Image 1 (cartoon, helix red, strand yellow):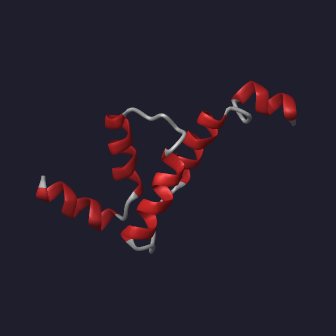
Image 2: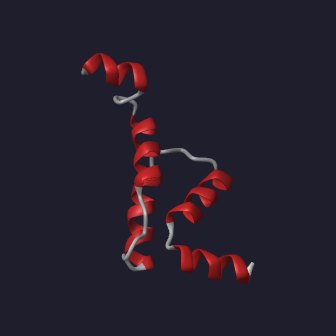
Image 3: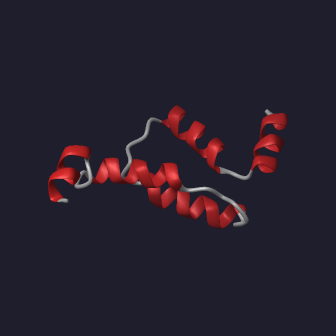
Amino acid sequence: MTDIRKEFGGEDEELVKVAELRRIEQGGKTMEKFVQKFRRAVRESRYKRRLLVEEFKKRINAIICWKLMESE
């Protein structure tokens, strides 16, 4: 198991945070709770800002995303 983690980044905090970030979804959580969880995952992922915005849009509730897109 340790060899697999080394090979695929299981021990690399940045990669672990990116993987965690990609698993987060808002679902029925409030936006506030979702944003808190998203920020925790982002802290060490070192995502570039533009990519981070795209990840955020993918993870929020579809209805809220639509409203944000309409307001842009």
